[in-house]
Image 1 (cartoon, helix red, strand yellow):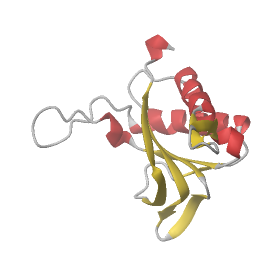
Image 2 (cartoon, one colour):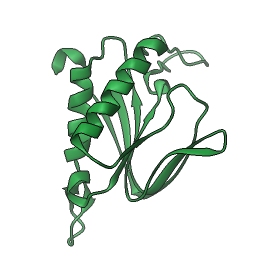
Image 3 (spheres, helix red, strand yellow):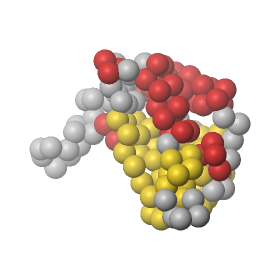
Length: 150
């Protein structure tokens, strides 16, 4: 499982020119699901994101988590994070979970996020989404968790 997290001033996801998910200050997460990923891996990823210190204190030190500041969490499914780009001119998506399995796991991960934190929004799995965001900092991190290590 791979995630790109961005600290944002605001972010939203549109599908067919309709807003399907939106947050103000918080974290935008692009989440890619790989073969072998499990709900346990997803839960660990959500917990890490909710508790990761990426908001500054008065001394400008990254000292506060999303939960500490009460910001929004916007989770967007992003299978392209699993692309193998090491050779050729076209990405290889063989490492990504199948869409049907990923849809179910993504839904379970989102439900878990809602059970742990109130301010959660999502995109629409499998849709052609337009993600509009204002990155704050910019602050971006890449998290990668593997089932065997969880």
